[in-house]
Image 1 (cartoon, rainbow, N blue to C red):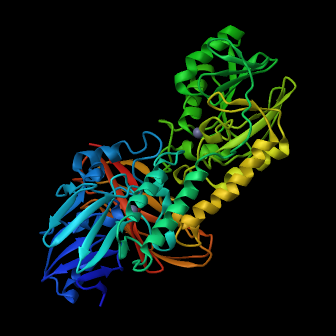
Image 2 (image 1 turned 135 degrees about the vertical axis):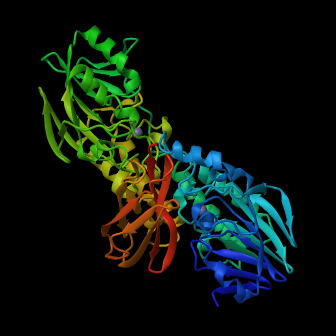
Image 3 (image 1 turned 45 degrees about the horizontal axis):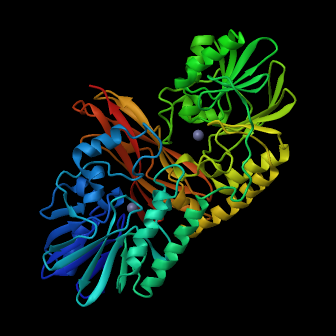
Length: 594
Ligand SMILES: [Zn+2]
Ligand SMILES: [Zn+2]
């Protein structure tokens, strides 16, 4: 028997991409979440002939992918009204078409295809009667903004289908879904409040989408999850709580600021460093601010920009590089980590990409020195707000100046950092703490960062950042269901490379599955690719064994039919890690030309 009986006429099916619950009445059933639909062929085990209703807790593809894969059943599909934007055909198309236009998308696990048949009759604080089942919905946002928990009194017991609002031990399945933007705790706070509402309800059994049913001390589990969520919220609060705010006063020229006799700040994020030779080095040029640079050059009588570089790949620090090269003939120099996401801007699934790829003329050393005219720079990786970040320092007009992009800001600005989130590749001990230690070791006198953040260095602020990083990593780990926290917190532990590519109908492409084992033990991974109807996808191998910490790449051939429709299509892979299914674990986008 593949179904597990939890109570009278209440069953759970665990062996799918999420747990599927069935409430049975006669030979009919209402099913909560659909997963891939593996459970359909086992319905006879529990005497169900007819599924009348399918109810979704939230619009993640592990909850619903089987609905668009298996085609229509004769059930009614009910979905949370608040998740319509991820499921309804037009909104769904818009979601994928604009996926990388900005920072964090509104979902990290949106369905690959839309569900035109869904009825959006489930509202927070609304009750719906479906057959003998009365669903009382409570908003438990987090995994999605519209996620709902359904309270049902079933044969005298109060059960709560809580989706991914929590799981056993007070943890959260893939807590990065709570990072609704790249820096604030708004998603964590909303999730906390949803649980606050749940904590006042009488619940005999909590039935989460992942992990074990919770039949005892349900209130304690809710409170424990809230406590851990508060830890995440505090981590988002400030990286240097209590540090003194310090700012450097630069001379305002109206269209730019004179920081030092040879160093000017212009626009949102950019700097111009002057050489005695009369030429300039531009740091972090942003396209909308380029006319300010032209004005500044005219003001200073500078005619030549010989080099340009960026502290990190984000568009507001890099998207002027190509333009500076074209207009003034500047050579683009990039740190290898910074170059990685933008040499081919379609390769990685990351936020805030520039609209065009940027090919460097010269790669700077990962760690070491470089010269520009009379200036001797030291450079190193500087992960924090994003992994793909560097920092460089040099002596300028008697000050030891560090250019460090979006790590870190004075305490009053953006919590002292450009924020952390998993989608941006933020890490704590390996990232923020490592970078803050570098600054402590070099002890610069002046920090020149993006967004006008120019301030004198203080060791106290950076020591606080090191302590914050250790504590915050603990808080995030505590929310993860297993010790292998990165499998729950790294959205790219399984990914497809490149993320976006263009194709013509009839063409065969290649995409590579990049699989990383973040756990401490070896794992066996089975994979099978999935694409739009009529496309042929074939993996070079279906099984890989991965040692702890290892990464392996598996090629997938992707053949488009001649009839492939123009527009954007979403491909994916189903992955089984040691027998545990993760349906449509990651996606790649293919733009088919007409
Ligand atoms: Zn989810
Ligand atoms: Zn940034």
